[in-house]
Amino acid sequence: MIDSPSGPTKTQSGNLFQPIFSGLLASLVGFASSFAIILQGFDAVGATQAQAASGLFALCLGMALVGIGMSYITKMPLSIAWSTPGAALLITTGAVQGGFPAAVGAFIVAATLVVIAGFWRPFGRAVAAIPMPLASAMLAGILFNLCLAPVRAVAELPTLALPIVLAWAVCLRFARIWAVPAAVAVSAVMIAVSTELPADLFANAWPAPGLVVPTLNFDAIIGIALPLFVVTMASQNIPGLAVLRSNGYQPDVKPIFVSTGIVSAVGALLGGQLINLAAITAALCAGPEAHPDKTKRYIAAITAGLAYILFALGAGVAAAFISAAPPILIEAVAGLALIGALANALVGSVADEEFRLPAILTFVPAASGLTLFGVGAAFWGLIVGGALHALLKTKKAAS
Image (cartoon, rainbow, N blue to C red; front, side, top):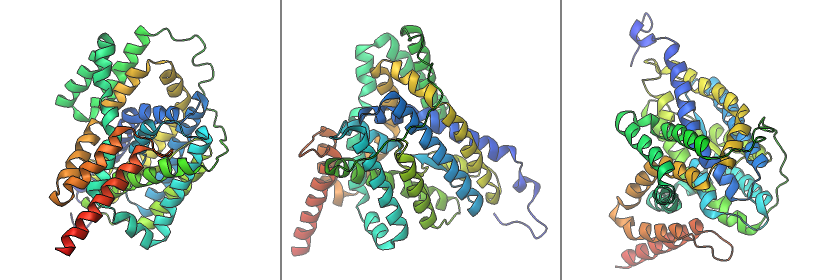
């Protein structure tokens, strides 16, 4: 939209309430929809409750600092999020040799790869050259078993799980953006009325960031760092850039990748994993709903960053509550939150006929939960699918 010579019209100028509300909405939906997945991911790779709370604190604070700083400098709505697909990867990978310090070492390696992708364009182009159907198939394999959790929860605890699923389904019909937050709210009620919470549950709920001394472990680097880097780039950063560009912004990727990578590496020392461009909630800050004048929409991303500072202060409470809840219910909420991502990944993996068979052979090992030579299923899925694609291309070239 082009402003008139005398300046933007009243309709275009809107008011500051719009971007502030959009930013608050984006942060609330982003946090409520996936904090349980983040905490479950930390737990899966061996974090204690205190370490998980510290990791969540580091992620929220890192997202706030990069989101506020980059949005203010560029005057673009650069919404920053944690890597939800990365957390899903941690859940499916499980504990690695060396425990949580080895996982933290893998987080730092993955963050370093993001920085390299920003500084060294050939490496960034090589990452972008990974066929999107194979990356989508790997992500679908990672998500598949997690998305079965609501079914298992209904079978095991029907009186507790059914209200959660029904709340999600009803909101999906009438207010899609609130579907997962509604499921989280209902699950909190179900847990509160059905679980005898320890009296001292929240005694140490105030976030106490703790240093985790990382260790480097080959299995963790191959099984966590490389797949974490790939799914974060393919499922978060690239779609996030697409959202920005579709709304008329042309950001320079170098400062985005470098800043998120460096802050991720520092945050990893407190237990955090990767932060990256937001993908789904990015549209709330970058679209016309945030402000008719696109030069004002950066205020929405800054507001979201400020909100994440408040969420960081609640990291200890969130971790304490999740630790006391029946695991199957937390898994069910996580599965509901990831169903949309699974659907998108499945569609993206099989849409191109040329990649259909390689994508299926990526998906099957990634979904199997296989651990071979200490390396998790996601890596082997990408290797198998990539090898078949290369073989089929060779055959096609020969004919």
